[in-house]
Image (cartoon, rainbow, N blue to C red; front, side, top):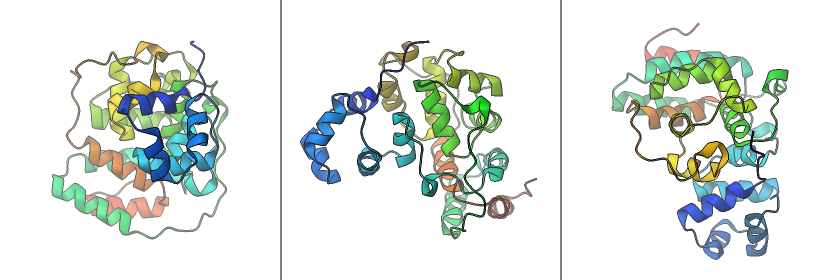
Length: 252
């Protein structure tokens, strides 16, 4: 497997978007010298990444995952046991009309944030990866409370991609090549523009800027589902079951 080249992902994203570094520093309230150091290859601190994330339209937890920095408790999913319910809910929500999906998302956002009752679940042995872009993708899925099996089911629902849980895990461990079509499917679930994701991946897995046109089927509800999945990570199992009732079914 190609060695993961540090945090060059930040430079590749800024270069892909043709962003003005000085303006980005002012927008985020960061020191331009610190930002330029990070773009030159220095590993940025978590505070810098959390300041940059909103300006880049990314989740703070995703930038931390790309940097290989463990996410803090306040950004981790609230209830690890709720993850198995997410694919069931997505299977329901993906077939709602646009106004129904919007209403469901508003309901999810209206639910209160409950207190954490159990510690954040530590990664299991098979979820511990060597640094790579594939590993970062798996960490981003885990930040959305999706394990290998849940990720495979959600990918199938929103992109039409039929892969096994072991294939998902293989991406994280570098055993499965990250093709451009597979990267495009991950982009749908993560809610990150595929061009951005490909730019951040760089030459790893030979994707880079060579994406070309997407030909595999993707569900029109994909963007809404990406937003829904991000919001669900802060809910408990019981709250997600409530959401299921609103969506039209009892989740088990």
